[in-house]
Length: 393
Length: 211
Image (cartoon, rainbow over all chains, first blue to last red; front, side, top):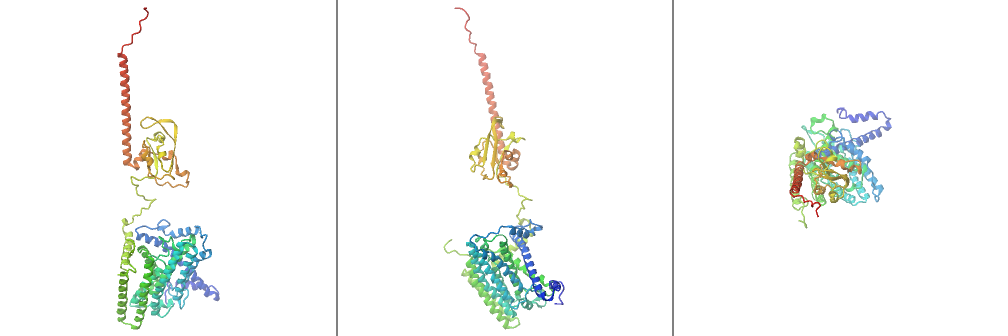
């Protein structure tokens, strides 16, 4: 601290200023509570903004206008949606397991919010600087599966249970490559602490940053991480658990009113947190993309990276059709996972080859070659790729 | 190569995304209540009753023949005949509908009433903004609500209305010609009768007296 600009540290300064009014014994707790309040306010606010931007952006991709009725350019649409979901009847199916049905959305939102605790959102801006922050994040991310299965199981509806089964299968399958692609970053940094990972990337060669995405293994890991993250958050093309055209709304078919809104919120918060993690691991977290851009506050860079990732999520949703279940599983186990495992080896190679240009060439050639070859073989065997019909023409 | 198609697709949507801000013709959306596209000439929603002249009650073409009421598949038309008569467009005395109701919540816009009507009295309207907060009374249209002028008919279906007008004029001309012919024939007959009466000698009165 100290030599960074006031604007960069504005939130830290504000928190300290506020906390100083309290007796010393209360200060740590008050600081934590303030941080929690900030997270709980900022991200749902972003969620509201994102929903309207998503609808408008998707509209533009389909040459439509998107919502433009409520407020200027339709930007008050989330308020109208919020009022609608709050005033709607909250229906619980007669045969549903009422307690679990009630708890599922809460568990989802709480688990997703916990993930934000360890994300460094700016210089000195992290709620809990945990040594095993990455581990904590994945533990919390994995417990969202529990809430999804709770929702699907307790609803006692075939569409819900189908959606929940798909969700569990998909999320467990993609949890593995998600972890493996993060492991390479841990190998390179030598720490599970997310603040340390950001620090390790926050230095520049000339004006260019040393982000992990700009190394061969980092780029490969980033690609696999993005794929796995998309699947983890149930976004298109991996939105089988919701599959609105086949399963109504998947695991939250039987939810209405505010519980439905909570699931919706949980999905978007999951997108924010996984994007934040991706930015932290590969895109240098809150560090500026060029050295002279450090005058811009660090938290702006973090949120800019998150929102860029969100835009790419929306862009993919506007482009890609949904995968079939077997394509999804084949892709996870036969392509993404082996490739991330290879990437772990390549990272080790990179580490032991020491600095120099040789490791750039060797690692790039190995990764690109394996990518092209496995993809070609798998495409030929139709493990993924165009659909083939055995009995129907 | 794997991923090539994804990149291609992403570029396509990106082109659409950027293009929709630049070129207006990409956006086909018509923002309905403010701007609207004119309805097609053949558009049809619910039936209405055509009247000639300025007065709807006097000019109503319907003669309460009840064919439409009988033919209507969902039975949404209700007609009560009048006790007295009024002249139709030809001038012939006809009964008229004392009550003519169409329940547009029942009507299925099949146009059969229009096809069976021998008097060109019922036609299809293009008015579709019929939402109401009264689901029973508001959707049961009476004679007055159904009556629309022939000019309005010309406005919404110009070609069809012109054909109908030509046909009605022809019918009227034919009726007039017939009436004239009949009148002439009657006159001729009367004249002939008169002439015959004049020509034939009066029967001799029987001679009076004399035995």
